[in-house]
Each structure stands twice: as structure tokens, then as C-alpha cells.
Length: 304
Image (cartoon, rainbow, N blue to C red; front, side, top):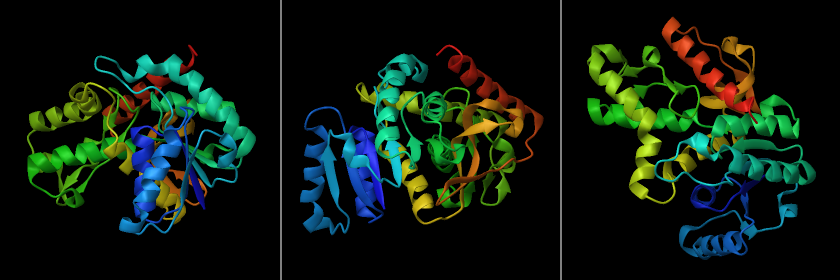
């Protein structure tokens, strides 16, 4: 299996290293910036004698190298800068995505596509409309990252280790995301039995702002360690046919009362991509919030 990564910036190169470190697949790193992908690929190759990588990596600016990829990860695009929202990137990154998709359609049309470029839900739906493939082969990395951020904050506050925390974050990868408080357990106990209502609301707010907080601190660029980890979780589930439930941005056709949009929902991931969108029974406030999040995405899509 070959995994191609479009975009050799921080997320793409960090993901390439994770794939090689776990011997998951051969990697093709692609970037239009002359020499960038090749330089990073050579750097990774030079680590092979130390790290014992069993898989290969090449860097290129030639899209022909993505042919016969089992999975293509799209990270190409402009990152956020301090003061920018994810939506500020829409038109710039939409143009980049269209060029990327044109090349995917030409050289590897049967691949599974994992979208990482922001604004993620919009780019995921745009990819679906541009490439016209089966909806189970298009997904966006979002909810897994937001869930991990929520878990990290919950762990710091409660003292429970992350592996003792069960929770999910649905909705758009942005300020309208929906941490599912109703499905959050800390050490097997409902969150309301462990943390005060005000503290829960505070942590939900921090989760929504976490990406922007990191952008503000870095001053240039955005998060990449955690996004690449979230991507790796999805790639591993596909490669090993795990049938694992991970919140991802998926193409909606009536599930949760949402259609003609892409939004973060719980999906079962295996070798074909998304094998199932799981429809949980949510309390009214969380379902309404999920629908409102989807509406916000759809309103932007209608302007493109």
C-alpha cells in the first residue's frame, strides 16, 4: 500500500514521519514548492539507519508519483495566522484544493481521500463535488483531533488519564463544534458526577478555541503534532480494517436530519474508508447544535 501526502508543510511532513515510524506504508510526499518535498524525504531517509524504517519515502513535485495510491491525504493550503478564522482561508484554499483534486482525478481516481486543509468541512464537501466519487471514499480529519483536545483538557482538570476518558466531539471543525457532554464518561462516571457544570462549560469553550490558541502562540503557522496524530489514527484504521469509530467530517445525505453538506459525525472506518455513519440518539440541545453547525457550513458552501 502506498499513501501519498499532498503538501509537505508541517502537518504533511510530521504525518510522513509517523507513517514511517510505525511501518504503516510507503510514502509519497508531494509539494509544488520546488525541492521542499524532496528535501524532507531525503531528511527522513537519512534517519532510516537510526530509526529502522522498513518502508520507503520519496519527495516530488510531480503528481504522476501519486498513481495507484491506496490513500491520499490532502494537507496543501495556507495555514492560519494570528487573528484569522478557519473561514478566512476559504477562497485561497478552495483554489488550491481544486488543482489538487484535478491531479488526483487524473492519476489516482480510485483512492480514498482524507482532507486536512482548512476550513476542513467545506474543503471535504468541495472535494466530494469536484471528484465525484463514492461518498465513503471522502472524509475529513476533524472530530478525532477535537476529541483528543477535549480529552487532554478533561484529563488535566480531572486527573483521570486520557485512556479512562470516553467522549466525542462532533460538528464543524471550528467554533460551532459540539463536544458531546451527554456521552462523556470520566473513569466510567458521567462527567456531571465528577466536574461542576461551570467547569464543564469552561472546558467545552477551551476545546473550541484550542486551535486558535496554538496559532496565537506560534505566531506563524498552526498546530501539526496533534493533527498529524489524528490523521495517523484514521490511516491506521483504514490500513488495518479496524472498523474503528472515529468522529470525521463525512458527506451527509439525511443522517441526523442533515444533507448536502459535510460535517463531523461518528463514523466506522475500515479498508473501504467510511463503512457506516453511526446515528446516535442525542439529547435535543446537542442535536440542535449539530444541525446548526451543519447549517453554518452549508451557508458558506452556497457562496462558493
